[in-house]
Image (cartoon, rainbow, N blue to C red):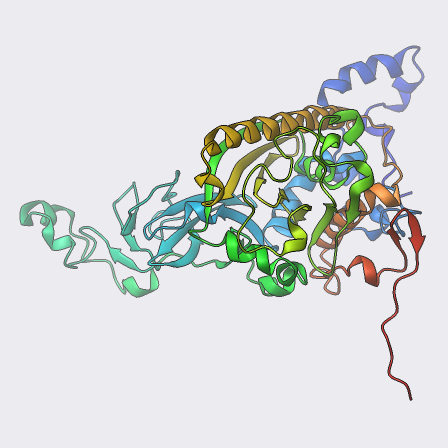
Length: 476
């Protein structure tokens, strides 16, 4: 069967006959489990649909992805192109791009990119000098009129045009160099040099929900189509999340010994709440959770209503976002935007995590706590935001700890996938099938956008199975 373990990787026929060979060889192989045990060509055929056929089944029959997908470096390498470079990926928080001249670097699918606020227009480029390939920007900066290469001082306008090539030609900037020195460095012998064709290479960029998203391949559908009904559904929130509307009060970077998918999948289910986050259950109870998914490249569920359990998340502690509808004031929306972002949108603030995968077994989380100006105007706002951040930091640390445990466990060669609970883990099944669509890269499915819960063959509502609601039809 596709995906079965090839034990010949570890044992030759003669070794298999020796007493104790299995245990000795397994002990020697154990430290290499995350790297060597999951050789793609030997154990899994990542381009073969049969590898994923059990995950493709309906959720109540399906099996989760095999443990190898969290450890195999070849799978991770394929993800860079098939998942990250082909998708709309969160690259920057708009709070970091709200002023002209702001620059933010990011790495998407292994490729360095830079985002710029060009007089109010957000642009994205490959973060590479057109001359000799030096990376241009390696840290957030502001009040920049040009992007300057640290190697040979070539300069680019924030719209990507090449505007400065010191001593490379006789442009106005080059003429500022003293004549004697300029003559020594003159490169007028370069033939057919056309500065207009040497600008930065642009990348598709669109903004929504307080984030700047980039698509490196240029092949993804427009962002509004990618997210389907998500943006219209949260149009009232969107009015409070644009550039200049949000305030980042706290930030933290977490270095995690776990695959990025483990972190997403953990966020997507609330089955683990009583065991891992008992305090969180006081305000976001298991029985108050419901899935909240329509058509689009996202996963989501809601807590409705929020309860007051004496936690910093309790509703009513801070003024709510000024543009949200009245029915949202006691509801939290837990959203995961494929592939690399998740956050819980509470009525007054939210803690967002953007994932930056470093390898198959290591991920960096960039977390930001954000709110609006009205929430910061109350007398004790600073103290409340400090308490709120400490609470989220503790929850996130609890998640990280358990995810690192999962990462270790899925390295076992005996783990070939588990079963899904529809009520708690349909969102994980949805996410994993998005991954499969991307990894197989079949033309018909590579940009398939999943339907919502109401369009599925069955869905879980109010504690019981229900058939999807049929649209009304006009009488003949």
